Length: 83
Image 1 (cartoon, rainbow, N blue to C red):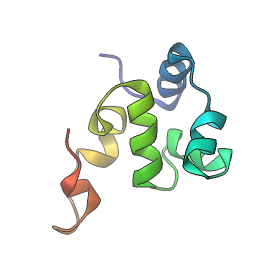
Image 2: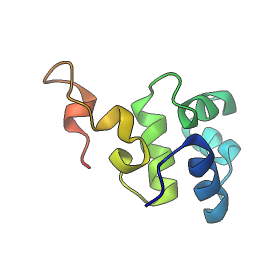
Image 3: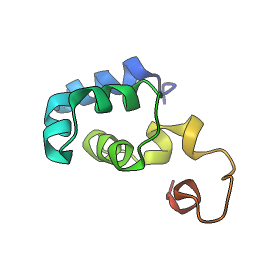
Image 4: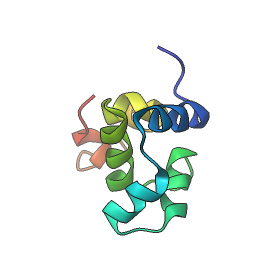
């Protein structure tokens, strides 16, 4: 599998026919929130899960740098994310 870069995430969404605007509307957030998650800026678990769902891959595969590192605490959302 290709390294999951922001450009590759955008490509996969486009391939599925999904826009950032559609995800933003479904989640009730502004489009910039979705864009920032695609580019690994702030960390919104809810938005990242929605992006991964639209791509059709586990969140740990779509955002490996964030979800595949050891959690900072045991109650972390990272600890509960399934890969």
